[in-house]
Image (cartoon, rainbow, N blue to C red):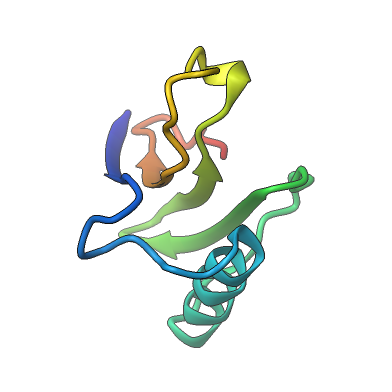
Length: 94
């Protein structure tokens, strides 16, 4: 599996200054513009999940926010993550 993740904490040059919905909207629109399609996997609240065929494999693009489920509750972190993943066996998911 190949995974690339980018994290952007608040206040960093790459972090959006807008609400979470604006960040998700930005990545959803940019993904569609660049040939990504919404993944058949269901997107949850606060996430974007898209897929694109590259080099004969499906690549999954995910955008999500850190939260209590990632063990960051109470530490003041409110950044987001962008991840692209693929697998040699064709499996992969957001």
